[in-house]
Image (cartoon, rainbow, N blue to C red; front, side):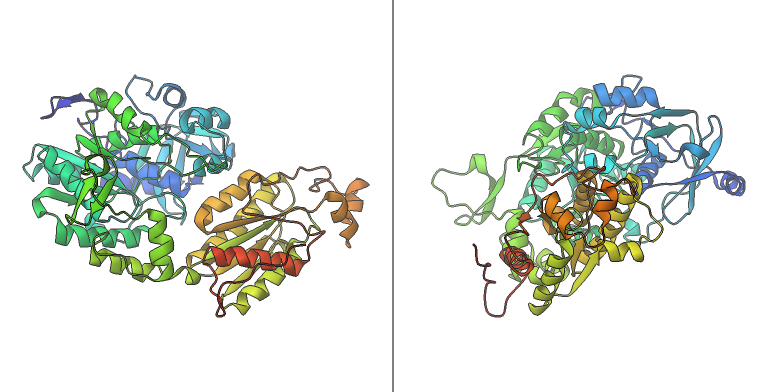
Length: 585
């Protein structure tokens, strides 16, 4: 690929001719007809996002899902096989290699079974979960959404030339979905020497507005407001709501020749520093030569011990370190705070001594304002944004939440879950109880008890629960769910802020005494195998939100304890005031 210079004086391999994998229409007709007879694989939502960005050149110079050489070097050195910087492995894992034939074609289809592309498979290689977790994410903690997700990926990656018939269809905000080539052409027409990209997966408030305007003005450039609308952090504000806020802001509060709003269908990895560098490369392909890199850029939040996964300024350092190669300079800011006496925003490091300041954290926005139905103050956010957020996010006692009971068979999960269901409905919440035994009769009929089938069962329950939560209901799930990685995958699916893990910590001996069906006895005699707690492991939660003792406490008292926790988190509003905690022995 040709390397071009720009007005910053930087030379970059990411600003030349873009990769374009979409075949001409006449070839597409013939290829589609031939693909009908090919074996096929169904892409995950993540792989579908990746395919779109490969096809349009957003991942240039990458022109396919990574082969083994690119993968190994990307994981170990943050480079492709030819030495160019690329810090995130973009691979296509498969869990059923039976349809794969080297040097053969395979059809790639989306979740609706629509044909998107044909790959000629030239490589198939194994990858290592722990190596990828250690090198790319710097952790094996399954509270990291991607580490948790990777446990469900196939053990084999495939690669080869791609012929893309169509990119995934998007029916929303069509005018804002610009390819890299379209974005670069539009930006060139603004007539300013530089482009500053702003990566965001959150609504924009006054502080963000101020820092983006300062960043663009500081380099005499255009702002590329480039929100991610693919896969972001579980629990984030949905992109439909976010994009409406971006449209309102750019329409009313930015100079029209200084901003371009364009949507990025990226599947984030939440890899902190590495992801920030990846974002810089992607934005270079869209025409930017500067990237605003904030505190905790692309962070997944806190680990299972409540500590940040990455340092707050690690991302800024890595983008700066590689700027000569990527052609992208980091634009950094300290925290922006409001100075009430002067009615303006300023970086916290530049606030005059003795000045009063004001700020509102993201948690406060969710908990103390939107969560309680309070209007966001005008100094913090524009009225148009506040109105959109209030429409999409009702008070917290009307928002969804998932209570997930886990524990051995016979521990008391179902009994406590039923008591909690009654108490929540008494307090005005709409509840759906998903009991493990009932789910296996209906939703998961036909599944066995292998690890794969158990994971499938739990993920099905988790998917249903996530939909209930998304629509404002309470999902109570009671299933053994023995594996921590799968439980954390459900947490990520629902969203950590709306997930309450309840560990029903009943000793194995007590569970055996309670076993009216005789399942433990049969497992002890070897009449059944793979029984959790006997010859199959139960991985107890390390940091559940609630841990219950069903020996010394009744199901009702335990249910009241959970209800009290939900009331403290404002998911329940009692007409008589705060829900009283249960009596303690």
